[in-house]
Structure formats: structure tokens, C-alpha cells
Length: 335
Image (cartoon, rainbow, N blue to C red; front, side, top):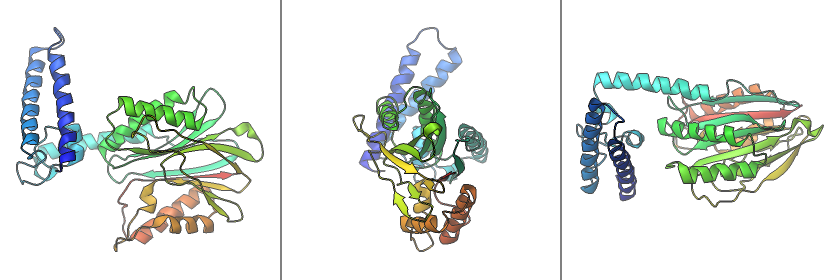
């Protein structure tokens, strides 16, 4: 574990130690048996801080390998890697991960919403039991819908937990904030000030007003996310630019917003980098060029069919049954 990692986990341990000590100092809030357990945990944290000091933190005490970092994020005093935990503990962990997966899937929309003037398809696949991709359709005080797609750096339980925070914040903020740029900026400030973000988040937000009439104008802000692809009915392709930095880095990041117009037959394709960064057995990535060519050839397909074909294309390229990263794709066709 490098010096930066050690400093990061040291801060997590110190914060956990402070919070537990403060709880113990609050009179009349717990039973004696609970106080005993917390004191035992404080002892484990003290031992872990000692291991940080002598640079042995994160080493499995059984096999001398490395304890998974994503587990240390949640349980920083852990001393045993997954390969070395007991059969009983492994079974319990699998049950908890299965429950976490059900919760994560329940947080995502169960189907694409109906937006007047559009046919919409969406599909999201987690590389692990719990994924770090997120998409949503948010309504506010007006009749417009905010279409969201986001991606956490990393995957697994920590990424999924961070996304649940983002989802909750967005659903509250979208009730009052109409502008995609303002919504993105407000979310970024909340993450930077209130959430211990160790994995940054990319996100794109589209504002669609069904009342805008025949040729629809859509406004978007892109916080460091993969460039969405706009495929015109005749096959011409545009990629939509990044208009601000990723979320969770600096609270003073500013975000611009842009407008695009869609005519009948145009398709807006949104995706996470699990698609473009899918690798074949030679280490070659699927890449944006292949994705653009796929979009050009398949632009006349219904959104659901287009998405299904894309996943088949990526799997065929990679030569693997399962993808290495979380993958989410959404297609919106103007009717």
C-alpha cells in the first residue's frame, strides 16, 4: 500500500475513532453490552493505526497478501482478505451482498419513463453484485424531465453506496432546480462539502420539456462524462462535449450548459465507459470509434433493439461472457 493510500485510511480510522469516542462520552445513550463492543472496536482501530504507522496496514494476517481496499473503506480495521475469511463469514458476506444488490437495483427505475415525443430504451448491468452506474428520470415542479446517467470511478459496494447518496440528493434537488448546469453545480458542492468522496463521479444531465413542440430543444450539462452521441436520421453523427469537471473534486467547479435540437428519427445515445473500455483478450479496447460506427449503422433500430445489439457487439468483441466493468446504455429516439 502506497503512502497516499496509508494517509487516506489513517484519516478514515481517525474519524471513526473520534466518532466512536464522542458517542461513548454521551451519557445514557447505550446499554453496557453495547458500550463494551464499542470499546473493543476502538481497540481494533488503535491497533490498525499502529499498522498504518509501521506500513503494515492492509496486509492480510493469514496469507500476507493485500486486503481488498473496497472492504477497508467500509471496515477499516479488517485484517483478513476475502480468500482467507472463514466459510461462515464468507456465506454471511455473500448474503449481505445479495441484499445490497437487491437494494441497489430497487433504487434504479424499474423501466424507462414515458416522455411525450420519444421512444426510450435503457439497460444497466453491474460487473459485481453491486454496481456504480446510475441512471434516472427526474421530474420537478414543471412538466420537464431530467434524464440522468452517471458513473463512479470504481465498482462494487463502495461505488454503489456513493451512487445511492447521489440519487437521494438529485431527487430532492430536481424538485426545485430546473437548469442542468445549476443542478450539477449544486450536487457537486454537496458532494465536496458533505460526502467523503474517494471515487469521483461523472454525470450528464438532460432537460427535456415535452411541451416544446415538433422540433425539440434539449438542454444538457456534462460533468466529465463519456460524450453522448447524437445520431441524425440520415446517419450524420455528433458527439456532445464535456461542459465541466467530474463531481467531487472541487466545490468551485463551474458547469456550462448547451442546447441541441432533435428532429423525427434522431437518436440520442448515452452510455458509461464500461462500453468503450471493454477489452478483448489482446488488451484492445472497444473504443469510441467502434461505438460511433455502431451507432451510425444501427440508428434506424428501435431503442431497445439498438441497445441489445450493442451489448451483443461488445461481448462479441471482448470474447467474454461477462463484462469487466459496469455498463449502462440509454437510447432516446425522437418520434
